Image (cartoon, rainbow, N blue to C red; front, side, top):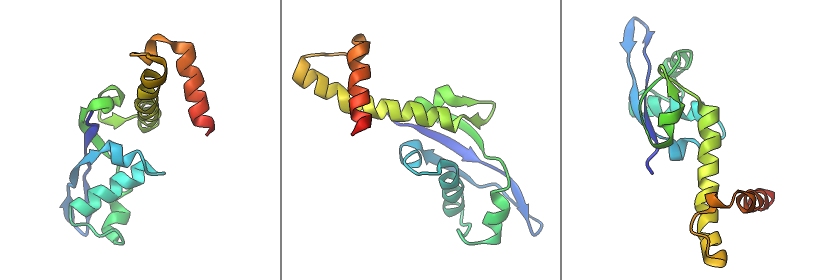
Length: 130
């Protein structure tokens, strides 16, 4: 599933108006320790704003407006705000499920791990403990 969102913002620097916009690949973004910082850097780099510039310093003071969610992001976007913490948790759970489901099928013949919540919880706990 493709997990993307359109990120944009508006700011002024030295009398010039900037409106950087970028499609954010959340599968890449959520792997970063600080996803919001990654989004600001993506907005900068895709719109010709230097990563070590005064423009970036001004830009990061403005809130990012999110729109056009695809995939998991659709459930975590409201009024232009993205619940990045909730999205990251759901994304991690989905990633773990994608790993565990084939294992459960291969070794236990289980087609849908969600139908076995106790086993799923045990496998997730074992996965996270490793």
